[in-house]
Length: 325
Image (cartoon, rainbow, N blue to C red; front, side):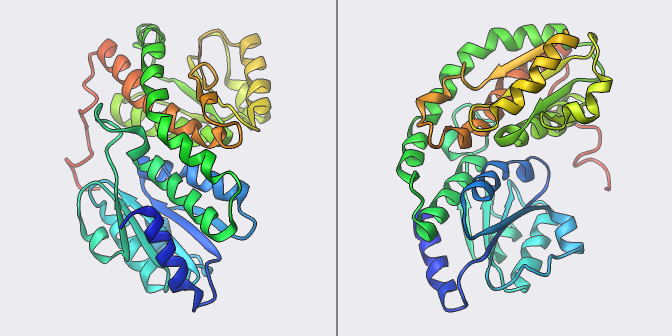
């Protein structure tokens, strides 16, 4: 059963219970941050749905009272992280309809009402429209389309058709820039990542999953809208900064932050969605695709180049899967 059919069946089944009033996204780490595009879309475009994101273990220990029979609980884990499996069980106990996004079957897929398989972002052969954040965004567009007759639905579906081609061309454009970043930052103990609006999830993933987890580099994530309300006091010409410049309604917020950084910073590595040709996608929906391009580029180009320069295999771990935690 595909996304369109799953959404249709959920809506039909929920109609007898009063419909759908909320969509909650629940996961850990990169799977959690991969929900940002879908959450951002529903937040900004839905007239009816309430939405929120929860880390799996927090959801288990502090279940929102609003989660119940009128809720869709969307969970995601590549292989079945135990906290997310438990979160799926708890969500289902509240009466919520559970939808699991996965790569490998697990207890999470066994207990969830529906399951949707995706492809790993880390594999070069994976199509961008089939990775977790893309499939979840597609799910969110389908919800808006079927529940609220979303006016730009066809533009979005057209966007999914070309997003992989945009990414492939962006890889060629970004590779020399990523090489420069890696050579200049290979000895830095701290690298800031700054983004906002529809790209906040990409900034967060690059910090916690790529730099901290895979390269053991300290990496604060700063929202562009918050930079000038405290974090800018830590900026000087020695701080390396990866800056994600989004396309869309919040671009002026990014530009204001960038103006400051260009004045008082020096080691800026700017990735601009416009330069990556995101405007090949209709302006009606292109902002919702920022994350899909940025995260793929950061994971598969910038991370890898930094790993090569540091001579630090990005598959190495000190604690993950090795010790009790």
